[in-house]
Image 1 (cartoon, rainbow, N blue to C red):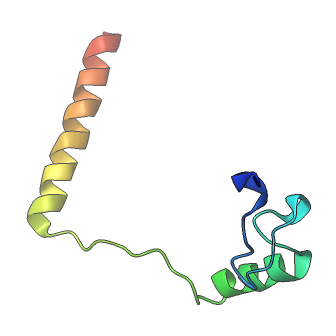
Image 2: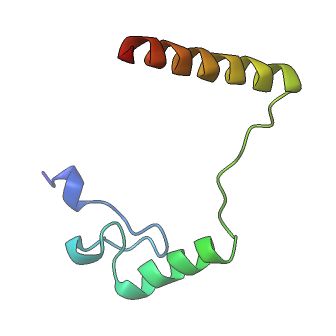
Length: 73
């Protein structure tokens, strides 16, 4: 039975990955993937927050900072 760690496939060309370039099979595929990130082909989705959500987050952060200051006094 083949170890799952050794059976990973390159996300670019789908060949078997090589430990030296993991998770890729070669430096070429690693460079292709890096180029896609740098050129904006890949992106991490963002969540738009409403004004109410931003206010709630700000209140939570300010409350935490207040509690941290109280602990130091």
